[in-house]
Amino acid sequence: MKRYLHTLRIEPLIARLSLIQFISYFAAWFSHVAVFTLLVQMNASAFVIALAASMQFLPGVILAPFSGALIDYLRPKPLMIILLIIEIFATLMFLFVQNTEHIWMLLALLFIRMGAASFYFTVEMALLPRISKPLNLQNINEIHSLIWSFSYTFGMALSGLVVFWLGVYVAFLIDATLFTLALILLFKTEIMLGAVGIKRDIISMWKEAFLYFKQNREILHLMFIHAAVGLTAYDALVALLAKEIYAQQISIAIAIGFINAIRAVALMLGPIIFGTWLSQKRFVWMFLWQGLAIIVWAFLFNNYYFSLVGSFLAGLFSTILWSYSYTLLQRKTKKEFYGRMVALNDMMFLFGATATSWYIGSSFEIGFSLKILTILLGSMFFIFGFYYVWVRKNFL
Image (cartoon, rainbow, N blue to C red):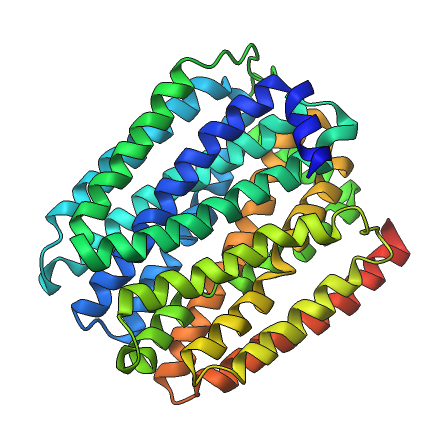
């Protein structure tokens, strides 16, 4: 933890952006429980729940070809301000979702809000290597993932209690207020950095990017490896567990909130435990342990309290997988291609997360038990682990 605090002391702009990041992430996860609780209260089908989960990731897949070029073309701060404003208005519109006839409106708003959130994230991840010292990059990525995990933890837990006591609509109002606070702080933050300097049309920029992509094949492999973390998109799984199993044991809102919160505590501990131990050679163990943890969780589903333990194990390795694979990619990418390469990377990651949500919902609809489909999900990490070993030996 000392190395993270030291990095924030010597990188004041990173520290300021991290504070804004914490508030906006906390807001995003605060209403997350409210959205899925509302769907369960409306007795939405497994298909609709999976569709709602995928709406958190699908916008990033669709927007990536445009966002990457725009990030390399435009100044970052005005772009980030516009995206936060979109998130505020989309969140306020959730207040008008009142019954099952409005479910499609809810899905559309999720698409808009998560599209803006995904775009904002890509802007920030392309910005970090440009404003930080190269030796601090891994620490900064780990700080980013810790903030995500911390806000995920307390956002989920606190939201579960607020939804239980005050209802989903109060949670949406609090959410919009937090986004507004993040916007005010961003307005007051000086980012003395312009666009990368590329002044060509978007098609030419992408032609150049794909030529660079073709000449640096290790970047493609690193993107596939990072996309594996998308397999940990358990939102549809947690909602279905709450609906099908835990509704008889505990409040749905609290069940969803605390399963995710316990997992997020583990997400936060992962970089602290493994960050200094990790190396390119040891990284394969993160994939193998992640797969085993998910399989163990599957065997603990039937009891809510045992499932909390499984959720913790399933989260312990996810953050370090995300941050270290991102760092490997950033180190291999030239500065003038940051926006486009990060956008493509996020597109692959979000496609993996979208596919995972669809896999969970559709597999359950056709008769797979939640236990079996989760075991199959965990097994995929063993395949990615061996794939990483091949990439390391041939490209890194």
